[in-house]
Length: 525
Image (cartoon, rainbow, N blue to C red):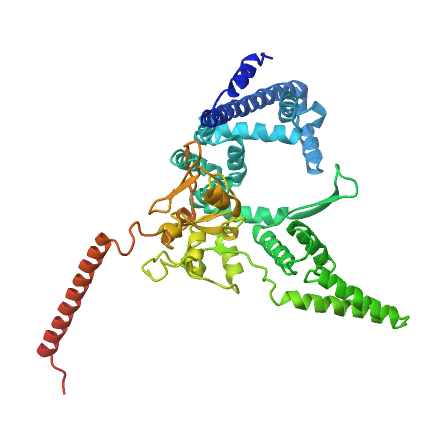
């Protein structure tokens, strides 16, 4: 193992660097790490190939000519049909040997070692161009492993085209958040191999599972985990959030605690969460005290009184409690069945067209278009609901670089502040999560810019500029693209005037032609 003295010397030098220089160090080390990860995956794949060759040589030597007799082949076939590996007696396979070696070298468990080996094989044989973007530092290891997992069900005959499409998309765009990157990959897969979307849906249905296990680190605590189809998980998430929000503001529990209590309430058969504020708990205590002082010994009436008290407390909070809500963006043509373009489920990602149509069959719908000709609301501060929906549908998440927070949970922010003359329209609005909204508004040195196409740039206090939305909902749904010029732009007004004149000229010509035809062909009466 080589000495780390040069690296330690560089780290000592970092203490003398300014923040601007240290940001460059971050960029450099991130690219170097990606290149090192590329070589690591390649090495893992090559180790596997060599161990597979060794295993085949060992297997051939062990079998010999006598093992290839018809009787022995029938015996091996019967063992395989019974679920037994007929080659187990000849020792570990090449993959098992490689997993052991890679795991020992990298100090990772077998599952992680296998993931690296499989990714190395994909990098070498199925996605070499995409792998090259990892080697060049355009993406990191996490994103390449995501591509490997996402392409598992793609037809092998279509890997060549898909590999080039993914590599071109990565090279032509700035780095992006994981949510945007995942959506971009899923869209490319749906474009190249639509059947893979159906196969993924079948796999998701087959793999659903819920587990409850003791927490290994905290006695008395358990962990709940599960794998569900995205739309089912979104429905559960929305129900828990709605129940957690349906209590009084003075409830002392945190949002996370209320969501946990809501899950327990659902398991108990309740459809709402009992408020824990002082007023509600005091009322419950008073009702319980009255029941005890009444001298009744029957348990049933006391239980019914508690239930009534809970119902009364819930009634106070349920009137304004939000309904379970999650958001789906889909083309109208897809909703009507004219095509099968994928939809986007906020917070989850791309879903297939059939699932989207089923979810939207009885849902409340809001139809949005990029038409911004209505200037009546441009001077108001708060955007209308339709404009806010358009802004959020045009993005996939928070617009800040690297942020994955949901677009429909984010604030709608003015790029040019409204107080400085910024218009409330699609060319000056973007979703920002509350954290990054506060950073942009109150932190010194941060500035943001938005061009007429909706591209959002952020400039950090060190002067570095980052693109916030390298892949957006407008890339997923082309009909959401806004016009590059405002409706009051002189060039647009001039073109609109010319088009109106041409339209009127055509109508007048049609009218005169119809009149001449009527004169030449009078009706028979």
